[in-house]
Length: 530
Image: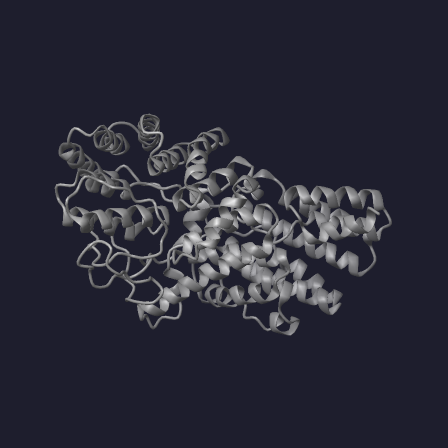
């Protein structure tokens, strides 16, 4: 099970920083028709929190979660609700804009100010530095000064003060905020969105499994009362995945998928559950739809740069997760549809973190798995070193398909044991990147041994690759897993070819522990268990 890590999400989610969507003419009153993100408007570049221009339109079909606040201005209520919805959809910059607009429409609305402070804060994907929290602290103080006698308003504003207080470390602040929200949630146990916000605060403050259980305890009553609460479903999917029980969210993930939202991140979210319960095809489909939303956004931007789509928030993450699902599902059409643009992107890059290179390697894995060997062998070599290694791996798979042992051996040997780095780069060395080199070399060595009938040697190579792939460092640093399939299933196949059915069955069963319903492992088990 891969943990949903902040580093992974940050690196995958946003290369350029475009807003979730652009904004158009303002409605004259709450409830007036709004415009869908995929159909109208021109995309804005995301602005610095606190400096963003207020939007002039509500953003439709991004979920739910708003609740009545003390304001006599219908438009302020509408933008407050929309800000909550957008925050739960991880449309971060647009949530900030919506809450700022709510404040502009009613400067005396304490909850609008507190909501604005909330949207300026960290998320499970994006931390905020001490300096970034200063502006939010000022907004939170305004909210508290504006709050009347309402225990809810004052409690919410006080929690925001804790979140952004000048004293202590960022961890201290996040913990204090989570504790304040937990106390407030206990005072208002029937307030669904408050419970969701408290769960979000808990997850941000502590990423350990016990913390996820506490978040789940807050979310489960909400889902029992309001099963279609998009924020509750979103965070429940994350919490159950990290907790190690993704199946608990399967029904909720299905409900979220059925909502047909225009929020690309919420369209993507069910795939976190689907992948880890073995519904790989559904994971691929969810991300294909999320990617298409991003592509529509890029077209609406009117940007002539064909790479503009890579600046859409979470687009990279959606592509990589879609590739992970499609390759496991043996869905060549989706895998190649997602891989080809990423290959173009990878080949155009002169710089990129080792982490980003490792994730983008998925596109080369998909090409090696599904594309015509002649096309793979004609691919231009990328400029970045870990992408070059992935390119060699893809070429090795192409030669294996062609039965060309000499070509396969050459590509295996071209994958280095490690990448030479400057002294300055050494601090950023990523152990998982070098582990990927070892995995891909061993897999190609195993392919060659299988081709030549050296099944015992092949089993040894695959066992080596599987052991590396399943280490905690490698298996938990990205979601979905950085290498496209569980190599242990190849070990099972090699053992079966060597005539050791007992060991083959053991390894096939073990494969299902790391990838539920792996189709190759299931086929081996079906063959051996009669």
